[in-house]
Image 1 (cartoon, rainbow, N blue to C red):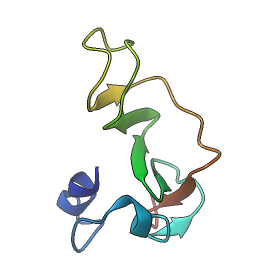
Image 2: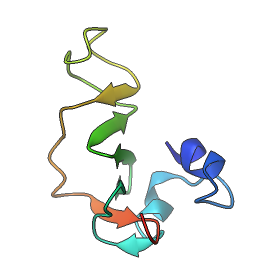
Image 3: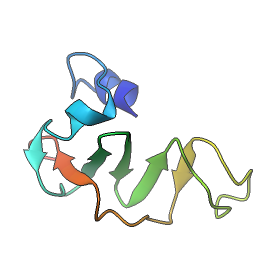
Image 4: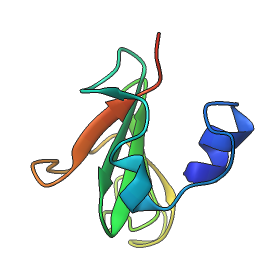
Length: 86
């Protein structure tokens, strides 16, 4: 997820989940929101979640592993951050 943000030029270098808790602007963005916790982070882009710790079957593939999903997860323990303008 951090590598994708880096590739999109939203980051100067890849970051671990902890530093992402303070990255960008506070709160959810219009198009891109990073949800970061000290030990994990995932991203929601245009309503789709990309998570490396996926544990659901809505994409029709394996139950675990990194992938996109329409199913959002509880985010109460995560800091919501977004890139400016997105």
